[in-house]
Length: 275
Image (cartoon, helix red, strand yellow):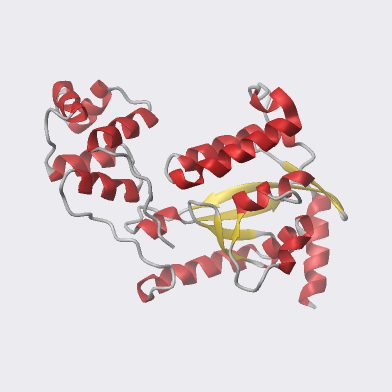
């Protein structure tokens, strides 16, 4: 897994301007946070001044730039990258793998899975495997070890979005989430926009309408299945202050039943499989 963006911006100036605007900060606001003049921020962003390594690291920290993008900016400025990108299988990440395994096991039989920033599924617990194959039976026919990408799974003609009964409610939030991730991992943007086109074809202009004013505390996704309607909401876990690009890209999705009927179906079927 290579967590470094393959299509970085062409210049340091573009990188810094794009990162600042993504956080909706003015040059003055950023300058005040860093303790420098707005004039200096303007000069660096226009290429009229070159930041020191220390200032650039502080700049990127204030913008909460992804670690991979920080490396890109450092290299664009002529400095060596700071952050490494380990493979999840590396020995140095053994404690991380143990922690992820504990999280997945503790959440079982409720679904949980580990994904990277490109929505590649790295690990699933029993509950997630059951739910995935219930919604997308064709996944069971994939060769052993073949990775699953959730964006590709949603684009598939028999993908999970086909079974969402409240797609009009879910689609805007899903696309917003995916487009936010695409700002960090540009390689997924074409598939994200392809999914947006598919959703718009199914929903028409409704997919682009604002969310309703009266919203539930959490967004519930409802699926039509052979077991009846199943309803879920999700929480995400990430590593605090990661210093490795791979760790910064990882997240655990914890899926919870939104009603007693869904919980009963999951518990019954996974208890049978355990027996």
